[in-house]
Structure formats: C-alpha cells, structure tokens
Image 1 (cartoon, helix red, strand yellow):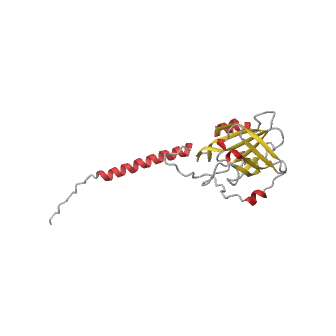
Image 2 (tube, rainbow, N blue to C red):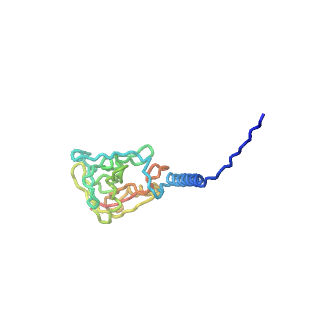
Image 3 (cartoon, rainbow, N blue to C red):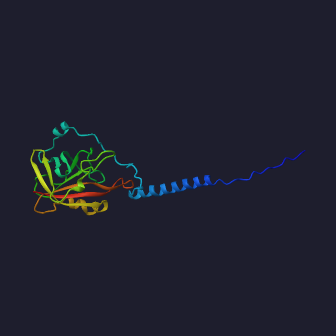
Length: 226
C-alpha cells in the first residue's frame, strides 16, 4: 500500500480583504456610537437622520370651509393670527392635560390649542395659553416661525362671539425642557404684567430625543393685552 503524500497549502494573506473587514468594523462601531448619542440626547450625526419615532400628527391642509364653520363658546379663543410670521385665522381648540399631566397637542399641524384651565380672552387677568406644532413629518406647522417674534409684534385672538383681542409681545425665550417643567409652565400661566391680561404662546424646538419621546426645548412667547 502506498501512503499518499499530505500536501499542505500555504495560506496567503489578502491585505485588501482584511482592509475591507477593518473598514466595516469601524463603520459599525461609529454608527453604534452615534445611534446611542442620538437616542440618549437627540444629538444628530453629521448626516441627519429622519425623525423616527415621533408622534404621528395630521398634516392634512385645513380648508376654507372648515375655518369658517369652526365654532367655540362665546368667550373662548376661536382663531389666532400673528401677522409678523404669516399666521392668519388659525383655528383654536380647547384642550386639557393627559393622564401624565402633559398639555394635549393639536391633532393637526395647521391648528392651535388653548389650555382650558388658563385664562379666557378678555377676562382681564392671568394669561391665555396657546400651543401649536412647529412641524410634522414632512411639513411645517403653524408655529414654525414662532421663534422669530420680536418685542412689540402683535398677536390677535378672535373669540367665539367675534370680539377681537390684541396683544403685544413682551418676551421671547427658548428654554430647556427641564426648565419648562420646573418653572416655565408656571410662569406661562401668569401675565408678565400684573396689571394687564397676558397671552402665552408655546411650541417645540431643539432636538427630538427618542429616549424622552419629545423635543428637548420649547419656544416661550409672553405678550400682554393692549
């Protein structure tokens, strides 16, 4: 019996293959790092990702007929207009808070809401609190340019009975969510001028933080009645 020869093939090193493996590993590590930072802080990498996980909001345009037929009780805000940023006769709906004591948001990016435990327009005290979206998945919301308001800009509220209330902006601040929840919302429920009725406007700003399920900043506008 003839014993066969065992032939051992010498392994060759392929630099290109190992370079590709190295690049893939580095890419995965960097992606994991930025994904973690995005999840924890909302800080986006150089290439911006889509706002995945954001609460779904209706982007359907509001028709002229829907605006005209919108009705509310006589002393409640029916429409809000802010000429300086192109907001005109935007519908306002009354809302409360959810089970987590968080102010409910408008169902549509083209509408605004009034917190029904805040002041009513024309009451002469406290502050009327209005909230609206800065945008949705693909379109801008009614308050997208709220941060642009300057001291002295006019804001108009039309009540259910047709009476027009006018306010002038006094302050414009962008605050962290922590500051908003600590003392910001409390201040927004009070007039900045104890002798005049106030109006407070709020919308989201900053980064969307998946861990929190919301944006990390808010634009806070305070105005007083003329």
